[in-house]
Length: 126
Image 1 (cartoon, rainbow, N blue to C red):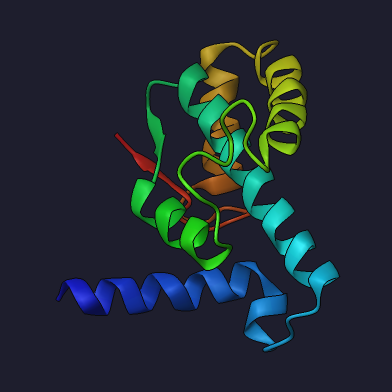
Image 2: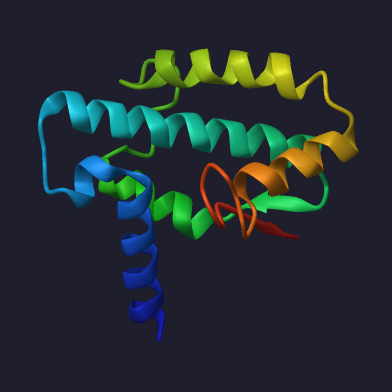
C-alpha cells in the first residue's frame, strides 16, 4: 500500500516538473524544475505559517526533494541552494506577510489545495 502511494506521488510530480516527465535531463531544464520545486516549497511553507487550516504535504515535498537531489542541508546557511531558498523566502514573506489569515487560507487552497491551480494536493487540510 505504501509503495503504491509513493508511485502515485512520483507520477504526480512528473506532471508538475515536465522536464523529468519528458525524460530530458539537460542542466537548464533540471535547474528550472528544481527552482519550481524550491519556489513552491517556500510558498507553501509561508502560507502554512499564515494559515491554520492548510499544511504542506511533507511526503510529497520529500519525494520531490529527492527527485532533484536536494540534500537535507542544502537550504541551510552555506548550503548549495541557500541563496535561492532565501531569495524565494524574501519574496513570499513580503507578499504572504501582508495577508490576513483568511486570505492566506484562500490562497493556499487556490494554489495548492485539491484543485490547486499551481500544484494540486501540495497542501492538505490540517
